[in-house]
Image 1: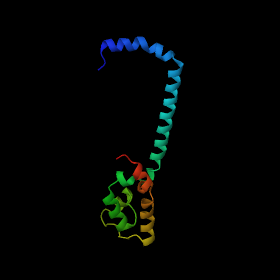
Image 2: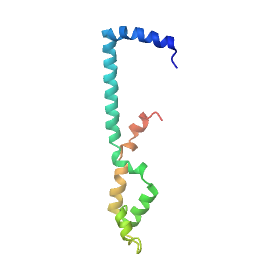
Image 3: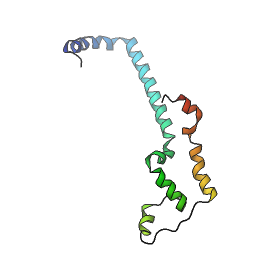
Image 4: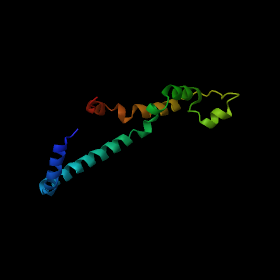
Length: 119
């Protein structure tokens, strides 16, 4: 917590600091860089939106339904077949490849990205 003395000193000095053009220019340049990084990070994050089901949905249930019915069941399908059950229809090899290939090619699995991660 800032002491009262420090706060008063800061209030007295702040107008002088704000009037210094060099400091204002440096602040503007830093803020521009911060905004560029934030925009780049938001764009990069958006590249993962297509794969969000991998961490938001129940992956085991997703795979179970996909392997049994070749797609994830909608709420309407579940309700419509609640009593008699839905006929199993496993995915074809092409459907399986179509489902797995985008995940394997996701930027998340790019070795360059994994090496730049500071995890």
